[in-house]
Amino acid sequence: MRIVFDYGSRQTYRRRTRDVTVRGIVEDAVHPVREASFALNGGARRPLHVEAVSDEGVDWTTGYKDTPAELRCRDQGEFAAEFAAADPLLVDGRNTLEVTVTGGDGQRASEAMAFDWNSEPPTFPIDLRDLSGFGHVQEIGMAVNGAFDLDIARNLIRSRGPVAPDALLLVGAPGKSQEATYAIKFRDVKGAKWLGCGDFFAGMEEGAPPRGIKVGWSSAGMAALSPTDGARAFIAWGDHSGDEREWAIATNPARPVAVRVNTLYRVRQRISIAGGGHRVRWRLWPADEREPDAWLCDEDTARLPAHLPRHETATFGLFQHFGLPIEWSDILVREVEDLPEDLPSTDPANSREPFFKRVRPGAF
Image (cartoon, rainbow, N blue to C red; front, side, top):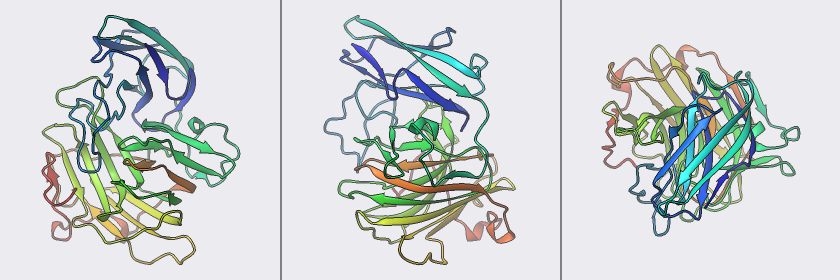
């Protein structure tokens, strides 16, 4: 049995959202494991979910695995060690994290990795149009789900195959109203469910009950594109968590759009977090054509009941759900000042009814 960290035994992290996520896999273990835990800087051990269910035979385009990890872990043995960016044991500079696993046969293994931590988030604007000054993808972002690679020769970032469900690389910084512009290319659309494109990510929420891995996805504004369905915008709190407060707002029905493989597209994706509400707008067009004036999708939270949770900040990330790897390039994230026409609507009549507790007929 062997514990392998996705990015090796020496890593780099910076504050980008409220949690730090260290991903890896336990190889050659007998599943389910008897016990799994991790320790930060020699502190108390914390529970860790190690995925027991194999990916073989799972049809991710129409369903998910029946597992406590929900969409967080595709491969058997996969794990995500998570701890707060404000954890009192976390220090600027060098830190250590040790993972210990006891397999179903009683075999035990431990593995430690060192990582450098910077508690200061990146400053806006975040300009990733030229990647030549970076040596590793971890100098650019943090993977919440899946893994990503930096291709310096081609000046792009690529999701690593096999692509995880809900793969997400955070490349931005926590902020309120923001706009991201970037280029994107799809290698193939066969068997894909969501082709991306990006997410203004607000964090992962604990599942109900807690299970050693956070499963509830919170988004202040996702741009999602399906090759069989169309384009949607998505705002949510605790999606997949099972929490009583879980909600989601999604473009429904999807907006018709067709994309070609190996064609470069451009995306403009904008969110507004203001006055207790959220709004997301985005559009996509071929890179060799003029940018359209109209937004492809536009959603806000005006009809969300007042007692339900909302997001105060969000961080831009590169998003994909399954399929073959996607390529992103020419990324620029900047804070924007909202004009009156940019703010979330205050009139429920002009907005969409939320979904609650994953009851989403006809949506996705």
